[in-house]
Length: 184
Image (cartoon, rainbow, N blue to C red; front, side, top):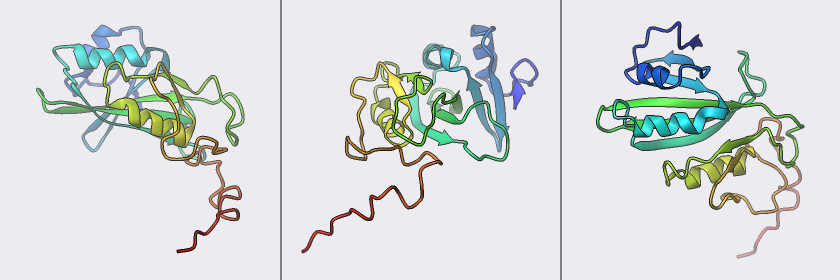
């Protein structure tokens, strides 16, 4: 990871981003020609809105939004969980990834709501983010403030955990033992 002030700003969107947010602590990763900008959670929504609205960036499409759990990852990370936004600019034929790290403050093995695992929803910027944010909430337990309908999308509403967290047991917590086989 490199601080944005130290990196040779090769990606065309990095210079306008740094000019617009000079005091934001951002870092850049470059891997196989793909640029990822790590931004603070507190300014993530403003940065994403800027990337969409600025004429020099014009990231008019949210390609994907997903979650990552870095528990047990060999390299140190700024936080345990990350939410990644993959953006595309049709006008400039560019892609960029924006990564936001979150660190839990309570034990993550249960379903308790952690106030540190909140991000602002981007559904007002890209309405298509609604389902992807619901999936990240369902699988990782990261909540999106301002989401119009934040509820489980893949599991039933009373499911007692978030199964893509790495501290969730691979065999589950009794789901298979209590599974009822339906006769045909």
